Image (tube, rainbow, N blue to C red; front, side, top):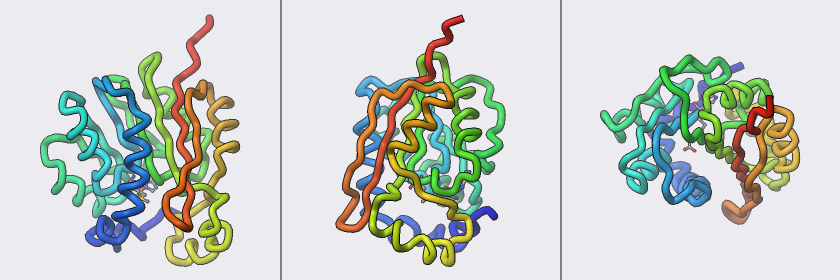
Length: 205
Ligand SMILES: C[S@@+](CC[C@H](N)C(=O)[O-])C[C@H]1O[C@@H](n2cnc3c(N)ncnc32)[C@H](O)[C@@H]1O
C-alpha cells in the first residue's frame, strides 16, 4: 500500500520535520563533490527543501524532483518555481528521461520502497557512466525504529521497513554499484541515519 500520509501533512511537513530534515540534508550535501554540476535528480523530493539548498550551493546545476505525493510536490513547486522540473510519479516505476543524470540523490525515502533492488537498478540505468548516487535514510539500528515500527505503520500505511548500513551496502554491490563512502551518523538523541555514496561499476566488456 502506498503512503497517503504525505497528502495529509504536506503543508505542515517542513515545520514538523525541520530539524530532522536540516540534519539529514546537510549530510547529503556534504557528500556531494564541491564541483557538482550537470543534471541532478532527487527521488522522493518531498517539499523540495534539499533541492533548494542544492541550488543555493551549486547555482549552475539543473534539478529534477520526483515524488508520489501531489501535495508534497505542490509545496516544492511553491518553493522552487521554475528552478526545478517536478514530476508526480511512483519512483518504483521511474519514467524515461531525455538524458541521463550526473547525480541522483534520495533522502529519507528508502523505507517506503517495496523492492529496493529493483528501485536501485532503475536508478543505475538513469545515471551517466561514472555518475553518482547518494542515498540516505534513517537506520534500523535506532531505538526509535526498533521499538516504533508498529506505531509508524499505524500512522503511515506506506512505511515498509528501515535498513541498516551493512544491508544497504550489500544491496548496492548486488545491483552493480561500487561503494565510495558509507557512514552512520546521529540525527538527534533518538534517531540515527546512514549515507552511502556509490557509482555504477564501469562496464568491463
Ligand atoms: C520522509 S519524506 C522525505 C522527503 C524529502 N526527501 C526530504 O528528505 O525532505 C518521504 C517522501 O517520499 C515520498 N515517497 C514515498 N514513496 C515514494 C515512491 N515510491 N516514489 C516517490 N516518492 C515516494 C513521499 O511522498 C514523501 O514526500
